[in-house]
Length: 412
Image (cartoon, rainbow, N blue to C red):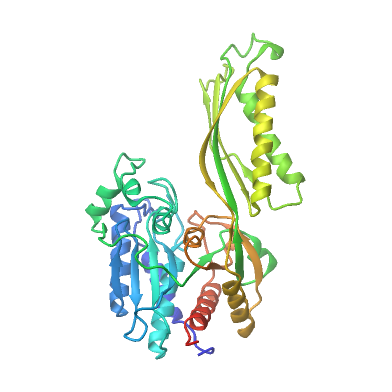
């Protein structure tokens, strides 16, 4: 079985086929959660799941499961594989979809080889991982893991004013099973790296041992609008300048550190936003990430201390809203070791690494041993139509998943 390989033509063909679903009039891939395009992608996946002879189950939050169970293993806790189908706006074709389709491909390959697993194997496609239309992101897996009440999630109002529960009914994916109806024995997610490390180091496989903690905050600084030409610098309450000091502080602090800490200000708005008026109000977001919880807390504290000092020094009023907070996740050592062993058996170079992005695996890790496998991303680009991973790297990653799944479902 160790010499077996997934069907590369089938897997790569399905990736391309799914990647063609959800194109707008300009050719951009936009498959937002619970949209018409999402329905089309889901329908295609379900057709492939059924063709593979698996049972299709949909829970109340719209998560899709393809279940391979036999008479001899139906009562055992399942091994779950998966990711998501929804995309960002103007997306690439690999993010999320690769994990779902490779999970299905692994099941089909094992079935065709006559393998009899000791427990059911399930492929999952979780709802609204990206969080573009509905917040929070990773919603389907968060609900599944019990971190968000399903009724609260279904009542979520999207950026377009729609209600998630209504939209799931419209597209035919408001299932009747309660989220969490299957508690996994373990969960594995195969994913493109979405970063530059593997490609830069020339390594074809990442055994992901942990996932960064994430702290999102929205900061609002209020000063006074005044004439840009007549107000002396020393007499200004400049909300824009105070915000600039935050940005440079965060960048300098992260750059001077010898830790993996990263800090990003990704959104910013000025009021009144006029070229000749001192900003009276600046609103911006801060994204802090670190794989160590104590370091992440230290970065949050450093930001809070800076904002307090700025308020006094600049004569401005500052308020902070917490948008999201996830602790770092340490993945299961046994599964990570199995990934490394599979790579060694296939003479495939690998490295242990941290995931800088959030994934469904971090939510499922709350209820089951979990881990991730990464393959290189060209240029480290993702959430972009330039997102690309070579066919060789994709198939190599899928074959490692195949081997790990076999190892974890052999008779003990």
